[in-house]
Length: 439
Image: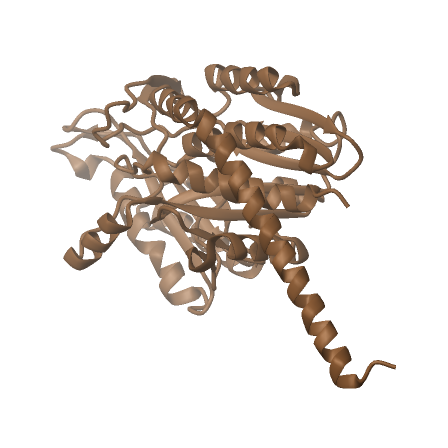
C-alpha cells in the first residue's frame, strides 16, 4: 500500500501535469492562430478598410453581404444568401461534434463620419425617404474582419477540432430587427440549430483587452415615436396657433422626471430623445412635431414604469397646450443578452488563461443593447464578449486631460485596426476551439 503522504504527492503531481498539458495546448493553439493570421493579416485589414469605406444601412447591405459570402465560399463553406432579406449563413462540416455559431453584424449607422481617416466613408443611402450619410460608427466593420479571419484560422486548424461551423452574418442589428428576421426566415429550421453561439463587440476600451460576464450583459432596448399635433401659423402670431414645437420641448424636459422621480433610483433606466422633426422654415410654426427616442432597462418592472411614464407625459403635455391627443407609438426592441452561465465561465477561463490581466470579468451589465438576444431567446446557449479598440496611451492622455473619448455611435469613433482585429481573432478562435476540441 502506498503511504497517505505519497498518495497526496501523486495527486499533486498529476494535477501539475494536467495543468502543464493544458498550458501547452493553449500556447500551441495561440501560436497556430498567429501563424494563420500572419499569413492573411494584410488582406484582412484591407478588407476591413474597404468595408469601413463602403458602409450600408440595415437591410440595404447588399454589397457587404456579397463580399462576406464570397469570403466564405472561397474557404469551402456551404453558403446561403438572402436569409432574413440580406443575411448570410455559411456551414462547414468537419466530422462529428457540436454545431457552433459565430455571428457578425452587417449594417452601419446614418451618421456623417468625422474621424479624418484616409479610408473614411463618404457613402450616402436613403432612410425614411431621405438621403443620409452612412458610417460604420459601431464597429461592425471590425467584427466582420474578425469573423472572416476566424473562419480562415479555424479551417487552417481543422485537424484540431471536430464538429460543424455555422457562420452567420446578420443584417439590421441597429434597431432594424435583423436577428428576428433571420429567425423568422428559418435560421434554426432550415439550418442546424447551434449547440453554442458566440459573438463579440468592440468598444472604446484599450486595445488588446477583452471583457466578459456570465448572465445579463446589456440592456433591453425599446423605441418610441411621438407626434404632437398642433395648429400651424405665422411665427409672428403664435397666439393664433397651437405650437407643437413647444410641446416637443416640454416633453423632452418633463419626461426625465419619470427617470429622476418615479423610477427606482437603484434600478438602471434611460430615456433619450435622439431625433426631433418639425417644420422646415424659421418663420412658420408647423402643424406637427415628431420625436423619436430610445428606452433602455435591465428588468421588466422598470421598463413598464418608463413606458407608462412616456405615454402619460406626452398626453399631459398635449392637454396642457389644448392640443389633440398625441400619436404615441412604442416599439418593442431587443431584449437583454443573457450569457449562458456554464459556457461563460468556461469561455471566460479560456480568455483569462490566454490574456492574463488583459482579460477582465465585468461587474455590471452595459447600457447598450443588442438583438443577438433573439438567438438566445430561440434557445442557443451563448457567450457574447467585448474587446477594446483604442490606444491605451490615448486613453490615458484623455483621462489626464479630462477630455471625453469618442465611443460607439460617435461620428469620431475610430478603433485602431491592429491589434484590435488580432485580439478579436485570437479570442474568438480560442473559445470556439475550446468547445470543438476533439475528445
